[in-house]
Image 1: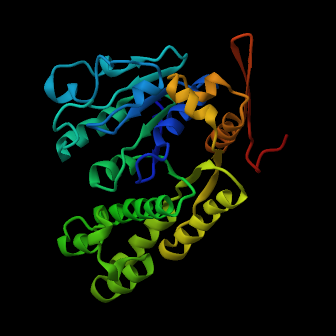
Image 2: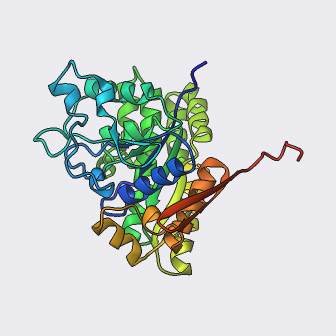
Length: 325
């Protein structure tokens, strides 16, 4: 029996908050722990994830799907030089590559589902348009990233809301008037009367009461994890708790606070040197933070130690509460 890959998507809505850096290092950490991992850049038209892996000019990317119809999809998997980790580049900077249509989106999603790996990590582009949200919503585990600044927190909240309401949108297939009601891909034009899940349920109760249960079920099933990046003090850490409370209040959703990454020059230096910070210095504080986040995602305890240029990995799997040991 073939076991499908677990898909983890890292998004957040706002550009420049460190999604690519965190997603890359998550992939590196999981690969170092012995899992087969594919890291994918889905920021079409402005892909730069390859640079974080020290790859200067990827030979292939998603654009090849549409310019070379006979391409072997396996050729998109690029060797990173890190054991167990393959990389798939975005479309590059080709004009129009960011404006791919629904059929092309489905072609790429089918490719993602066809991958044979333990983990597939998707790095989202900025914004809340459907191209971004539809990739984010295919994940088995959604991870949203924010920085402590209020502008980032509000963008992240809008991203979470847009992804949830996109799920509603698909539930309402065949009901265009209801789909317009839940179209939150552009928060500036969203229906203020359905801004919160409770308001939406009230409105549906009057127009389509049979769909209220479907809304409640989507909310129950959606459990994104939260990571706060560039934390400088305890107040910044508290931002994560505040955002989780905001999501609970207005969307009725439960979120897990996966952890935070402290603000550090070591992370910035690793970007300049095109070496993931988890490899450059696995015992730095940001690396320790990241290992805790990987532990939360994989239900394990991961510890990396670098000695004489080699990285030694210790991993312990956490047993569920129902197991006796």
